Amino acid sequence: MSAVEETGPAASARWSMPRAVNRSPLPGDGAFMTAGWADPEPVIDPDDPVIAYTAERRSRLAQALPAELLIIPAGLPRVRSNDSDHRFRPGTDHVWLTGNDVAESVLVVDTTGGEAGSILYLRAPSGRDGDEFWQNDALGDLWVGPRPTLAETQAALGIETRPLADFTRDVERAARRARRIRVLPTLDERVDELVRQICGPVFGPHLALKATLDELRLIKNDWEIGQLQLAVDGTARGFDDCLEAWSDACANPRGERFLEGTFARRALVEGEGPAYGSIVAAGAHATTLHYTRNTGPLVDGDLVLMDMGVEMASLYAADITRTLPVSGTFTPLQRDVYSIVLRAQQAGIDALRAGVRFQDYQDACGRSLTEGLIELGLIRCSVDEAMAPSASYHRRWSISRAGHMLGMDVHDCNHAPHETYLGGVLAAGNTLTVEPGLYFQPGDLTVPAELRGLGIRIEDDLVVTETSSILLSAGMPRTPSEVEEWMGALAR
Image 1 (cartoon, one colour):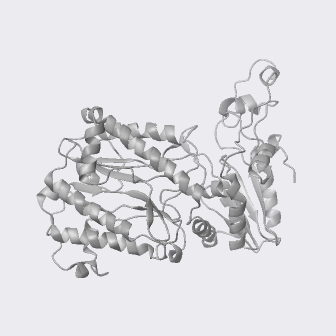
Image 2 (cartoon, helix red, strand yellow):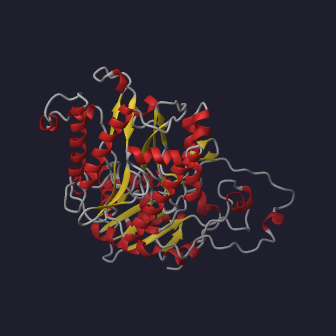
Image 3 (cartoon, helix red, strand yellow):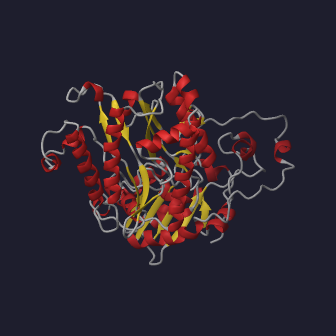
């Protein structure tokens, strides 16, 4: 079916953004505002490499959930304050299946008719011959810039497009023949409400769609791995930038924030920005695993834990952590604890290969950490006793998992079935992190005073192969001596 442009007020009424519209009409009928414009330039890059993979991905999804109507929204802009939105980040699965990143779009994969078909519903641009063009500050091209037309999107992405205004009618018709309708929930409240009206409020069946998509995304192809490598390389440059600004950061009373901002600039240049809320945690702040306030100073003698990553325009993300001495040199105690964490990370890396359980490399990290904690005198039993499921004593000082899948989401494929992820077996093409750490809380009276407030994590990004793994972040220093040399060369 050829693309049909969405026109007229009735076409967009149901799907209008719930926000104020700026209406400051000029004298006359507005003809002066809508006349004399050149044709808009194309918006979509038809040579985007991801387009080569999207049709096959939709086919795999259809095969996994046959005789169903599958609805995958791109998501809505989220309000930051009043009529100011956060920068839009499209839903991962929608982009993975289409290459489209336009807000409000909805993909429908229809497998009810034997042969699967896909339709992308999207809001057409305002055009330049109506009042919306210059009076609507949420949708008008004069305010927000051009959006791709339906025809351009269909030609560039190789998928049938229809006006967003047709979505409700089409879904209601398809519902009569579909064995089941599933929606990827929470991305678009309006789509969720439509599906609830048709299917009822039961939420469980929709989770199967997300689980299926995450399972399909677990193994990355060469292009995806290349995108991850670009994200890692950009992240490495961001760490270098931070070291080059080290003296200025140390002189600033909010040195953590100074480093966060330094990295953010690099992330915005390399890709879309930071892949997640950067953690820049100096001193005792490093013992809070998800510390993101980043408002503290950098104090000589402390360590600063920096967990940061770049997200590419393709949405593939890096996730790297380094723990650095503010002074440029580790104290003997800091070096000893850092070396325990590094040994644990290497034990996890050494365990990686296709055919081993995901849990195996987690256990390798945990066992090595336990050996180190015994050396420190904090655990007073054998390694086997401490690692027993009823004990797991190392978890007091290392509560998080020692790694996770990585991809278009930093914690990628989290909803994949247990038997194919957390309880599953690794395969070539899995991409993941290895990130053991030790975190001695300031108020932990079970450890010597000199350990309290010390937090260390080392995190790297890897690709599993048939026989081992590839360290994507191999160029970043890891050992204590390498870190000190790195800081000596760059920090000023």
